[in-house]
Length: 379
Image 1 (cartoon, rainbow, N blue to C red):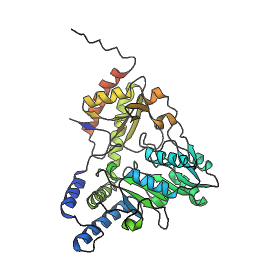
Image 2: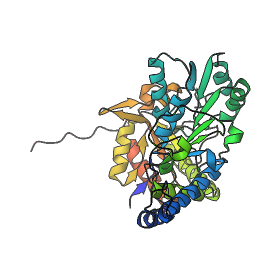
Image 3: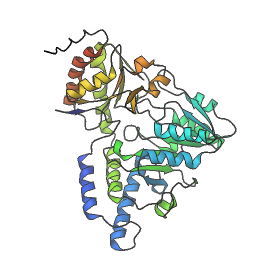
Image 4: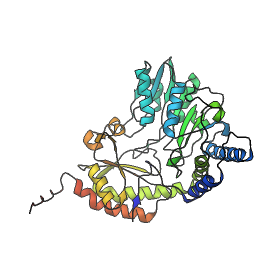
């Protein structure tokens, strides 16, 4: 039995989403910009999906723009709003941090605010970083590695008072906690369907009504001239179904209970839960095993049928310590001893029990105090 516990990376398709996708691929082939019946059928399905995605975040449907995913949404918001000074945090996803680094290379001033050891970037620290010339603040809603929820609403109030654009990467949070764009006070917000049991290749950007962003794609009047290109109707339909399913908050309590059960069961291994004691996504565990090798743990678990991830990013074949964990104050050694376990509403108790049993077998073998493996003989 394979047990998939890397849902913050991507999620498997929900059966209802797969069914809707297959039907749309077969039946809804028209161009949504065409005025004939096939085109208008496609337009209707696009708008139904838009309403569903908007409802997930408390937005008006007209303020939701379909994109190719979270990376495009983040880039569109950042480059579309950036002026003068930019404030961001040290724990952002690369699809936010790298566009901001590019802005810095182009001459924009940038201030990066670090988190506390618990993974929270204090709202007062972000607000204190704002200058008279600040035009953009970028702050994620929940961290993809630790699951720690950030005080976006408090920052949002300060940005509204000062007339500053606030962009929020909500890719990891959507469907796991309630989101209300008005309560958060954001101007733009990004979503990605493949974190919600829908296909890869489609996302959305919320753009506050009346807000004007610099265009980044030219060539058509689609999405109210905010994103040129023929709409991907089947993927939008699938995203809409997934968003509707994600509005059901009932599975979140079950997922949280499974996550808490998992954390309690691995405690005897001598570990630290990163972000424990503050608000976290109900599905996410970032755990550091003292004197262990995270890469070895991930490989050992995979061989035993359990899929998790490290708290590190792989770049050019090298495992680098996680920028999120080191920003929180973990040493490189601790960061390299950290794995992330992320559940979904499809995760079962049987799968969690299996993962617990295997982790108790695998983790001790990766610790520096573990007995050395015997050398292989050439005979």
